[in-house]
Amino acid sequence: MKIARLTVYQVDLPLEHPYWLSGGRLKFEVLDATLVKMETDAGLIGWGEGTPWGHTYVPAHGPGIRAGIETMAPFVLGLDPRKVLEVERAMDLALPGHLYAKAPLDMACWDIAGQAAGLPIADLMGGGSRTPRPIASSVGAKTVDETREVIARYRARGYVAHSVKIGGDAERDIARIRDVEAIRRSDERVLYDVNRGWTRQQALRVMRAVEDLHVMVEQPCETLDDIAALAGKHATPVSVDESLVTLQDAARIARDGLAEVFGIKLNRVGGLTKAARMRDIALAHGIDMFVMATGGSVLADTEALHLAATIPDAHCLGVWACQDMITAEIAGGRGPRNVDGHLHLPEAPGLGVHPDEAALGAPAAVHS
Ligand code: MG
Image 1 (spheres, rainbow, N blue to C red):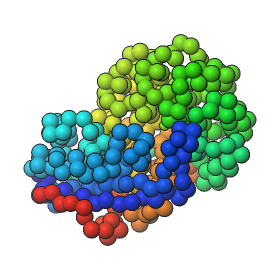
Image 2 (tube, rainbow, N blue to C red; image 1 turned 90 degrees about the horizontal axis):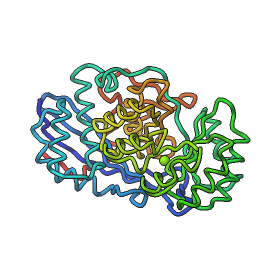
Image 3 (tube, rainbow, N blue to C red; image 1 turned 45 degrees about the horizontal axis):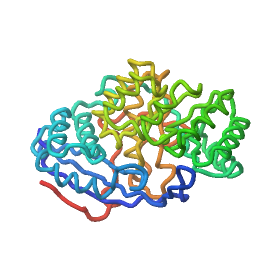
């Protein structure tokens, strides 16, 4: 089986509500999505998606995905998509770095490999749990009152996990954490996501001030060096996501004890093939995981769900469904959707959901 053609689509995914991160430093209103249709000479078709969270969040650029695919296409066309490691090496040789541009091609390969094997991707990867995965909400940086409002909105949709965005002002953050913990139900899990919004001294101030609450803080500072500098000076568990990009990052975090939780973002780390290695490093070091698309449609959410299903239930803290934050619908309502705050693994072979091609408009590029 050979990859015969790559058809690339660009789609704007508007957010239902404007969204701020990092203490209001970064605002987002629309996501630039790239959808890739991978056709084979055997008639099987796979789909991949790459949707960075805007281009000011981290070094990942929507148009860069399409440029990267143009560069990598000649090296990928003609390969067997079921041999995901060969496709991975071809992409890494053709374009060092730029992991986010490789993720949609990797995803399409896994989709085809699953269809060829007659198995959902998670089962092809070794076996997927059917325990529904809780969806973490995304509560944008707000005041105490607005934070309560947004949490109430997600609770009404059944959510039992929340990612509350903090950062920027230490005293306000302490107040918001204390307020959310006061209203948190016993069955709810809350992650306080700083999105790199604290300096080291701000991080120490907040993480020491809330030690009695035993909350989890995500990505408190900009870099792993910053997070390492805080280690041992506070008793608050840490999750890392923006600084978890390469396998070397994962190895350093595990070896040096920089975090208790990995937030694996599939687009950021370069797709399922590379993310599966991070999962294994985490499991080998007693590190629990959230698995998320960086952003995107139900396709990206489904890819994350497949990886999450390959993590033992006790070590998978949840997934994220960006689909609940965007107003565009590209798959006609198909695929895993929020059911009482959880996503259920699809049983169809491969990814388990494809877009309506007519909803994607004219292709941005065709490589064959
Ligand atoms: Mg995060």
